[in-house]
Image (cartoon, rainbow, N blue to C red; front, side, top):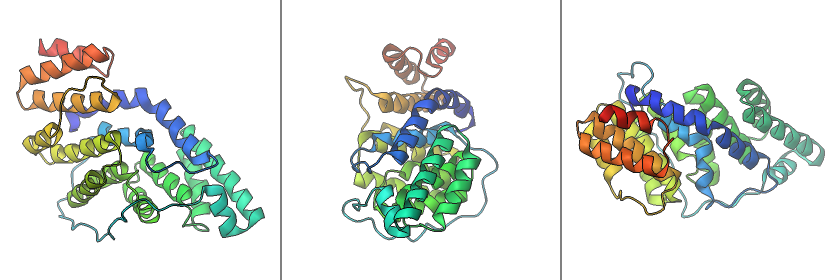
Length: 283
């Protein structure tokens, strides 16, 4: 979303942050790696991709899309972090490294991102192939606003796993850097992989936000409208998409549509972000 919507959505992100921290730390410290299909955990970080809009002046340079290897037909099966660390470092050193990884996850959960980064930097030099280390370091950089460093690690996560779990976060890093072609490429990969409705929705919101950042409001609207219908049993990602769509309707002057969607959101969750204020402003 652009600057005017960013403040509103930042309040939503603040409300969700505790839940997302729990999910991130729990995933990183659990004894076994979750199945790739369980990608509803995406909201641990990808909500930031919706909350943050344009920050400073965009670079004038036009970037070419990175040359990425195609994703495999399915995510790569990997051992959990404890096993991977022991294999890479031996039993004793691997056990110590696993303890350090859990310490980094706790620091991340407590929003002590500097501490988390320090621990993970010492680990990633020794075990750059352990997915949990790479992923958490990427997310830590993301929360610190270190977009290039985050993108580097999350690109490695993509290569190591063959999955799209962190595509919305990775795309948002490129959105912050003005690398629009990479946002588009990652959105295409995510859409084609279609791992879950919630994950695809987050990617769609980032892609629409990138279009909005470029002033392409009509294209952003088309992207958010495509395939949209009011669900009978809305989940959080439905409400988030509806909110973004309603906001763009308002900004484009389609007040009746905006009002209708805000009313629908309020009917399902009255305290969702600032919906009540938006409705009052719209009359």
